[in-house]
Length: 244
Image 1: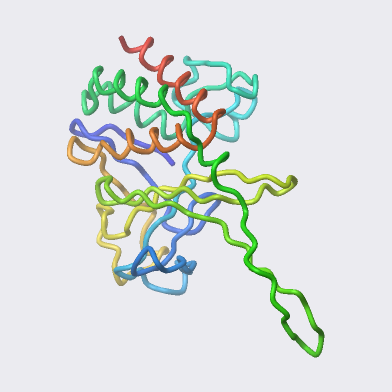
Image 2: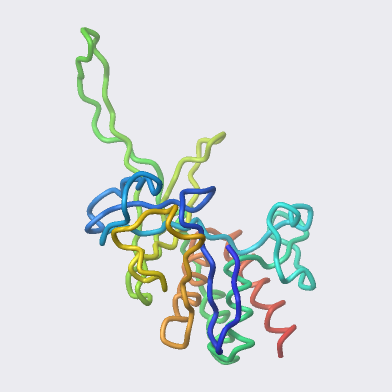
């Protein structure tokens, strides 16, 4: 992700192909599981959206791999690492400088997040449905379907903010992952019916009318876990102290 300040707006520059934590998917409604969209062989459709596994900080030791424009701001994370604000936090910082977001909104945001005592990580775990006998290729198994809940916040501009409860790769617990889903039709480029190779990048414009999604995403990160909550509060503090 990169961004450019233009005419008192923020132009977020995004990839046109599946790459890293950016994935194009298709679905009509939230009751469907998004199917990966092959951008080099299939035209974008009305139901195509970009799923962005957005981040908000980066370890100081990782800024060569994850560059940030806010290297002058530092804080100690909940994992005791020295960190810089990154990505989502950069967009919030830029929005404050442009007065798309006010000083009072940041104070209210921090105060609200500070009050959270319930967290997705603690309250939603892996569930296994009732085991049933299941025959497959002549062998009998005990089948238990695992359910991992997802939560969709749709009252934020033209996008959906998703919290997906996922299994940790090397542990028995879960971790909430946050994704921003941006419909392809919301990009500045007219992409419907065209493919990824037809564009160098996509542009999503943040302005006064849709900037609230940044505040909403910070709120949702603040609900994910106690660690996320503390990191978000620290980020809001360093940004606020730098600008005000």
